[in-house]
Length: 175
Image 1: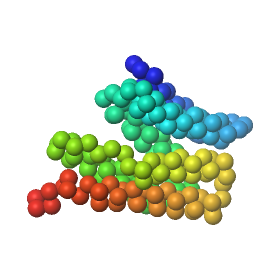
Image 2: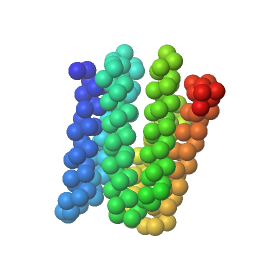
Image 3: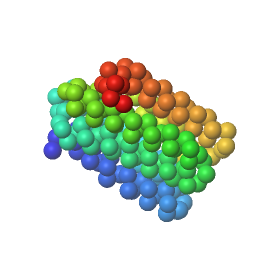
Image 4: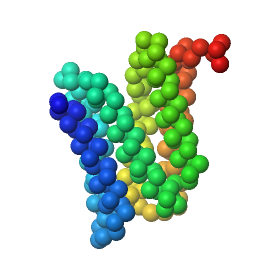
């Protein structure tokens, strides 16, 4: 297992730790959750950089890296939803975008194409992770709403961009 994949696996292992820290209240548990979330988020950027720049891209990494990212982010958003800080309808939009883009990528693979992550998807991931960090530190309806709005804006924009740029992947005559 190469360095990039080890970092991905570290992120996967940090997800249950992050959730336990969120749910088991103890002094400074939110600060501990924030540190764990930041560490996990940073591994996302580092493993991608290492994989691309040291030619360590593997099939395992192609599968596990985006899966780990999605599970980490969804874990946090589900927790915020449970605590009434992230509306369920907004979470549904985030989940639908992830399924839709994954489906588009699967169709592309069937046609011998790979849809690489676009800049808007990277901005969506980064802004979502920053908003989650902000929401872990600060609690307030206005700030929560700003974060929800930013997450939705980047989620919808990046999802639309994937479909617009790759509209030829779907054979609309067979829909």
